[in-house]
Length: 472
Image (tube, rainbow, N blue to C red; front, side, top):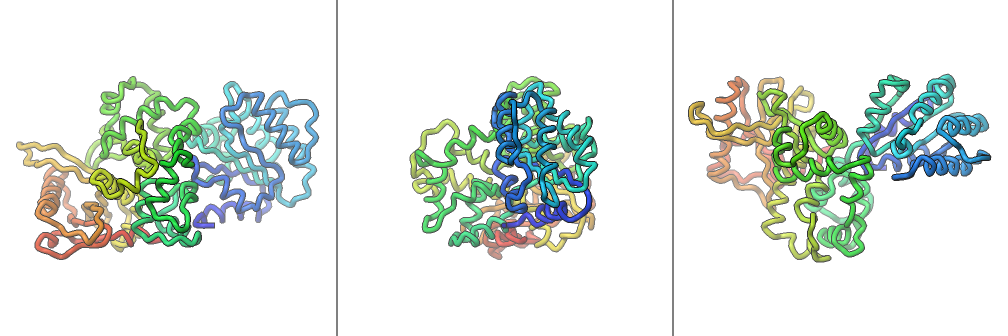
């Protein structure tokens, strides 16, 4: 299994001691939660059950009865409520001869239908029975990150502080995707892996569609643009599988897709028509926790001016090329070197850099230095002497240095020009003038194949390459 070393250790250790464990595993759709749990435990479950997507209360209970029956428990009459369902589960577990009884609930949020007593029954099962034993490993899993956080992990009810472990399963890094490609026997080079990552991010399921003997454009076309492409309609299912009513979530995403640097809350309201309310705050929080957007405060600015930025690779690709369009089955093969796609590569490369800060710090030799990662902007202001700047990445270090990063995607070694030199100098001037920082400013270039030394490269203090982003 690629990566997941920490997560595997947590799951394995739950089998080793003399107490029961209650483990919550969460992460976005397609991230590999079910695969991880099944692989680590080799499907040796005393009981396993998956919720039914968009199922009714009766359908969820019927499916639970079917899982009990599959595990060998005589069900009898159809179960009427979750309290009764968990009593039947206790009967099944009591009969198990396994040293550790592993119970796995997959997509728990789907089981929690409206007016359901699921959480109350789960609380009773754990608090009143399972936690008193020393042989239970209860694992609950859901793609609905916001639901998992509110109902289980940060529960204010009977599950408050009851978890023994929690695992937030995140996307693969570039290094882990490269490990997957090599294990699969593919001949993709790092630039091709980087481009596939630009589209699909580090979501493991999306990488299963890579295939031997195909060029990268062939793989992308067959995965997204063929008539029967497996991910052609992925966007339609992505949000409905995570949120009960995703209309407002999608409206927020649509709005943020229009501006690469992101928007403040007020700008989102102005550009989307969404009513300013606590519900908007909740939706923004849910999208952030699910990893679709990030919230950041520009360096030196107050939290009320926080900016929300869309960062999910696949969603951004969808809005760049797929939304509302009927495209050729060979769209990527026919267009992969066009100006529009080259511009998209540049924006996507910036996003990937933001997702690989630890690798950038490692290359800079500051892996152990405490830092803040930030963006920054200022508007032109003649009275204050500001030219106007937008800086996508600042690494503010406790050793009183700020790495001011410019990210440039290029098919060759990048040759700085007069405009690059002027941009660096303008950004430094504006940053120092506006924030009054006393820190040293180190202009840092992050690019694919390195930098050509020329008359405009002298201002650059450090260079990060694509290979550095593949550091593990």
